[in-house]
Image (cartoon, rainbow, N blue to C red; front, side, top):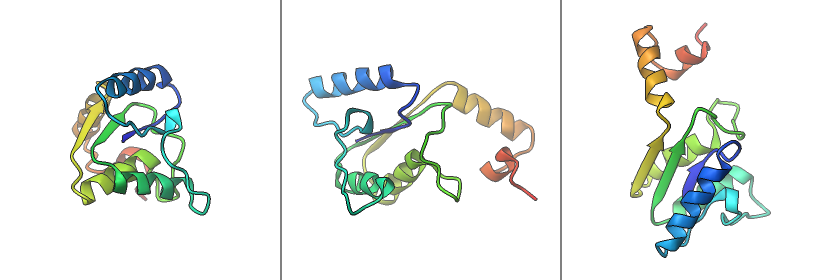
Length: 122
């Protein structure tokens, strides 16, 4: 399964899909419409079901957090990664170079968690 935001990285997702398919993998990717959508479930529940069923999990983290942000502040990709970790799925994470840079900057500014980084601390 390929987990990522979709908008803004379509070309990258096309390349990853083509490469993995070329290696013989059955690739589940929302962008390509290959994640099974269950009509009786929410989109998030369908994605989490795919995480449960997949053999390998590839997470792509970019500066665009994603479109499916939940009330608790966690996006679909974030939730999918947490599920893959919980299920101990073999997993890989590709992160855009801005991600570790931004994290190190927040840490240097004294932010110790994501709530502080978002400014949610009251």
